Length: 329
Image (cartoon, rainbow, N blue to C red; front, side, top):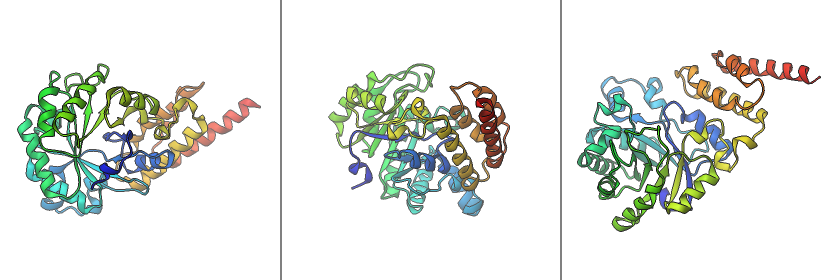
């Protein structure tokens, strides 16, 4: 019995996003509303092996190990890994079990060229036999439930061939990003395909959970997409930007701007404390998402993006509040 079997349907989970879903951001989401399942950023299984076993870099100094920190309130939590090598996947799957994770997810959808050159990520859609081998290697190496995140095809949609191949390995769950690798995020997610995916799943192995991903705007939109398609849950990615309250059913428009600034500062403080040596500039995407939609937003954003520390951010925000008070007077 894995945690997947205990989730109440429909469920809503955070997407694994590089340089976004680090331990600090997950902590913010946990405080603001709580995802039903938390995901780490994806981590190279090959890199984990070489930095720990070959280079002998201590975990405390290993940036890849810092991507596998588990913060308070972040349960259940899944570690996402990638590789094209079964032995590397087995190593990483066993490692994340030792680290205390609740599940392991195999990335078979990332379109990044450096990942695909390794035969990993979305490139695995073109080699289903290798994809199956990776799943079974992970399953043999750990007692944790193994899930997969992928797309509906590479150059074209091949759901009728690709999904049965994955289902034959009986992962605990499959997240389908409802675009092909070629489409990237340049076209709307094709949620109409999810109903067919559910039919394929039900015919082959109804125990495997199906999660839809792509263009989920908020919790109400997620519920509607799940109800229409029949899948078990929805994964939210870009909808989290500037709205860590999304899993509580709150929209960005409903959130007072002061709450957004407080959340941004809280994120910045935790980022500094929990994710060194990540560069503070990573937070710029969050600044752009939180500071928008009001008079003077562009000017404040410009000032905030020049900050190089949480302390500098707080100083700029204090000055903004003082200026705002004076203008109102």
